[in-house]
Image 1 (cartoon, rainbow, N blue to C red):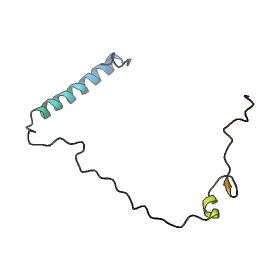
Image 2 (image 1 turned 180 degrees about the vertical axis):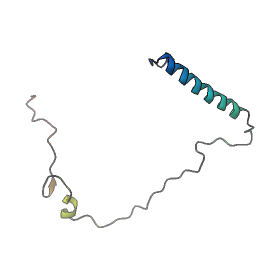
Image 3 (image 1 turned 45 degrees about the vertical axis):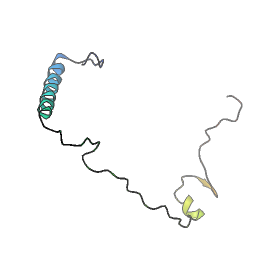
Image 4 (image 1 turned 90 degrees about the vertical axis):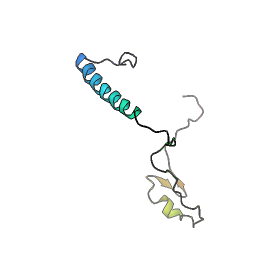
Length: 90
C-alpha cells in the first residue's frame, strides 16, 4: 500500500502500520458476521436536518455601525487594497 501511495516508509514504520492495518481488517471481518438484513441503509447514524432561522426583514445597520470595525474607511465606503492594475500592463 505504501508503494501505491508513493510513501517512503522505514522498515520499522512498515511493521507498525502493517500491525495497525491487520487490526482494522480483523475488526471489519467481525462486522461482516453481523446480520444486518433488517437494517435500512443510511448515510448518518442520527437523523440530520438543517437548522435555519426564518428569513425576516430587519432594519438595516446605520452607516456608523456598518463601518465601526473597518480597519480603513472613507465614509460611506470601506477602503480596501487595490488588487486590479491600472491597465498599463506593468
